[in-house]
Image (cartoon, rainbow, N blue to C red; front, side, top):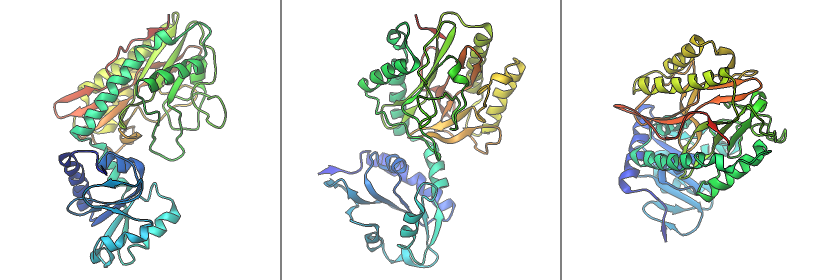
Length: 393
């Protein structure tokens, strides 16, 4: 029988202990979670069922599928109504507060779960879980390092995948194939409602200026209105750029990285904007420390863009994104968010994807994106790869 928990006992206690501290701070006596991303963050695997997090002690794993998972506190159930019998009488008493993932759970299922604790108060656990997942443990950081190294290896091979007359979609297919052969899991988990993407963006030329309904830094028309983002089948042309922002999920923990490639020479404006992006990332590395407000980092980027007269192209041209970076881990768009009105404060263990990008009409998108680890004594780049514009031929 396979052990349900795929992380060490020490790592489990570290992850669980920090979550319990956050629960205590908001007066939450227990938490019931079933979201895939939160499950993966706690035990290293996804299963059909629920995890009960008590105020103290180790979790109880309520499993529906798959069969033959074992280990401490594993209980097989057919329906959630079987859960209370395994938790003790206190969960049904008045004054007990249960946390549920109200932001990501369907209303009808929330009502069903609330009925399990008829005398208890129900609180939204989603904000607590978001704060918890924003700070990575050493084990989670190591998985992100592994993803980042493989991610960079893929990008170094882009030039060898291009052939004359190729479209952005054809190049993306080749990149996806290479990534999958190198172990990319393919799934691109995104935090937030109505956010969809297939393995990332490859955007050539003026397609970068096509607005999208999604809250991504870059747009693109996509191949069909059913998924209106990214590559649209445009041929890669002379004197234009190709921006590659592809999936870096090799371990369940993703890195986010963008690099720019060009066919022939591009305008000085495009080169200047790309240099500005690199310089913003350099200043981020100098400034980002635990305790720094995320909005200060956005202001730094905005000030440098204004100083160089590039504001009309920053984070889009026809449509502008309202942020310049975001947390990342199991999902894209985790906390903290680097935006002008963000209330987030950087903490040790945050992993942040910074993506100061520009759209230059008739050239395409330029700028880089790196995933950074916030440490007590500095910043570590988890996506080490050449940052200059790379010629396709």
